[in-house]
Image 1 (cartoon, rainbow, N blue to C red):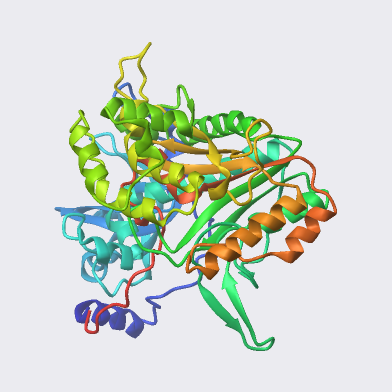
Image 2: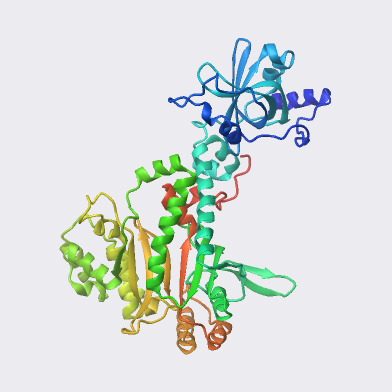
Length: 532
């Protein structure tokens, strides 16, 4: 760093600013991708540029120096900007005295601008033959090499370096932007309105989760960072916004994992005069549309991601929760009562574990039993059984066979949940113990949750009160009673279906990312140790 700062001081002595800001003067800068696009027709069959076809068109470019190599009186400089990379060809015979300063004053990581003319090298590399160059920004710290910058926490903490050192990381975040844009296009094209709702709430609602607390000084109010935008979006449906969506930043004061971050992004949308079955059809169309849009803007990268996928969007499966449990028990050779009854002692658990005929199905019997003992109702026990006996094995149980080779898992809609675990969903007309709800699992990961909305204010009142009772017994992940929302329903909400999906998880799925931190630019980390 001392050497680099000395170089900056030398520029200042020449009355040159090592942190220049007059880039708008002179000929317009051309981004590197546009410079390449101008000569697309000059490529030969091997993808190299034909020197005779590259016209010496004047170009002014700028970017970060990634590579600098000298070969006699010629130097090659690799530049990168937001659009891509391009080579700068520096000839001592052309640059004169300035050529020496290229190696004396320019370092890897510096940002420079150059003017010159287009050319192709003997190896067919499109380049800009520099007639002049200058430093725009001096990088005091040297960039790490791709092989040296591998510490995961350091990469998350210094994402600004990670994006430069590991180019595939930048590609994932570009993909995330394209995914969000594709989601907006899809819903805008369906006649939805995008809105923004409050991120600070006076009560806990919209989902069962533990919130972050904050305080408003002027109003002297305790507030909660939203865990979901659901209840406000449904208020808008009451108000006549019959198709509405939000790409919402949400906060949940929960543990960290490869699939959970305290701060995350959700897509939620609500559609009047629709049911959860309508939304299942729409979800399939949406996911295919977003994936196709990603393939169009990042064709090479998408092809790599798609080749590595262990799942397919070709076909989606819809399975009632009770059927998923039944299938799982049958494959494991377990009796039906496993799903609904666990005694206080360990004997039944031990017997069932021993009876399981497929040993590869490693059921977490200890936590299953502990979870069952916390359940207060039949519906909660059914849900607990599903979580431990069926959900972990969805990728194994639902695959591309028959009719395929079975090499990929199928996306699975688990439908018809117990009403006790779905306090905002509408009960099924033919079975009041269940609700019209689905969750979609792709590659074993929960991607989205949706249901036909409860619009009966008296039923909603009773569900809220049940949540309050659970909270009084010590349950943390419960909702508060929302009197204003009940009042909104009393004004009448049309039959409506609602949907929520983690944008981070969708990005993980489509790009093959292993951790949610790989798709969040600045994930939450502990404070950096002093001296780092």
